[in-house]
Length: 479
Image (cartoon, rainbow, N blue to C red; front, top):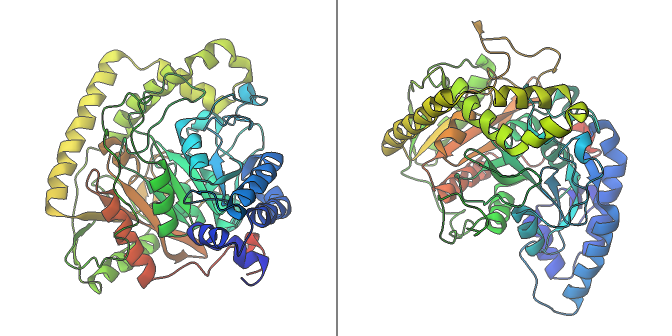
């Protein structure tokens, strides 16, 4: 297998095969990642909780199952991290908040339950902004401080799954689970140079969290990984209906997301856009993404640069729905634990509380109008491609307020491509497509609602044509 660094960066699906064939022990894998976390994470702050005792015990049990020839799951013995907004029985769950800093739940969220059912071993809980909301879309909290970008420690990972992306990029886990309510998987994955997939709304159920109720109109849990196949395997473990999730979107079993990954993409119609009608993009990022999208022509696809005209007020409508839902979910924190909340979480909840009903209703209509618009667009194209973010990772003290000479909103201006896709409910993936000044750039691939398998197949075709797995940040240690 080569040296231990090679093993740490071996895809999760391959690690599972090695475990099943008794060529690698789950104990060996857990010990490897625990050593790497101890060596690397003091500079990154990717983890809030390292579940060393639990993971070691789970690894011994996983090894015993293999040796005794018992049935095993698709990720048996593979160390996986969970974002610390997922409730985990027996493992501290903090939500990045002082309110929950000593909370050890007695039950799993649906997502945690399914990760364990896959045979994966939870190696730890990755950093998130408090209650997974930061108005400036960075990963920072009062428990471990800011999460650092492994490609440049002075820059942000973005948010809110920044810890998951940093851990994946530096080989601190075989795969990671994040959540994405406005770009929170895709933004950090792009900034950290890894794969991040947001499933179609409703494909992955959400229930049994610390915040209740969970209205969940925009958010989906999903994989952050070093390869597209890992994303598909992990999505397979997470997807499918659950009676505890009341949202009406999905009631049938998911397809096999890995079945068609190697099928050609010849004949697909691809639209490429760079501004959604209101955004701005760094010219170097645009060139990088345009070249990546054009590479699909060599794969037999029809690629067309298209102009979209989305409502410039979408960011306001997004917040009206997202913010009101956040307040509904965590209002008790504002009422009962105000003194323990950090300034960003407190401001977000107060802002959510102030949204009047008529604005919420108007924004729900805007969401439905966006869905109709995107349905029409996706009647013309099989896939839509954009940059994942308008700029590369930045110093959080120097947020972009102007991009390509155009003034932009200091909060949402660097991710105009992600939150509209949460509003429309479509699947989307970011895959590394190059570098600008040594920092990763992500290609954002969007599909029709419920066309998750096609999005994964397109990303896998790009990955095969333009492999990136050999390039690692210096923070990861020796190559």
